[in-house]
Length: 107
Image 1 (spheres, rainbow, N blue to C red):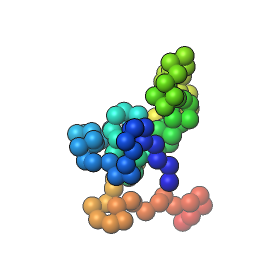
Image 2: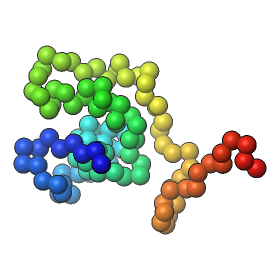
Image 3: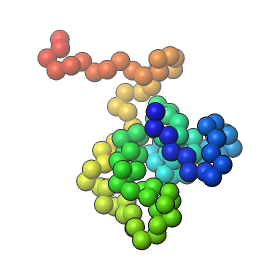
């Protein structure tokens, strides 16, 4: 499990008061939603884009305090998947995730 919590008083459980009033599923932790990915995982969180943004250096300055590095989100444009939402709605009951699409060649 990947968790990033930069709070000086790190506690494994993040209180609900630290969550964004409206979940930021596109940026999660990077958008200020401390209950979003990677500190938590909601089905709608855009895990791929958030991970790519972190790997590209979005957390370098906040974690190290080194202001000499300038993270440029616009440079990520070519590698992000730009998906807005799932192509199939979530189910109202467990398991919540819709069945997968058929594989190639399936009848």
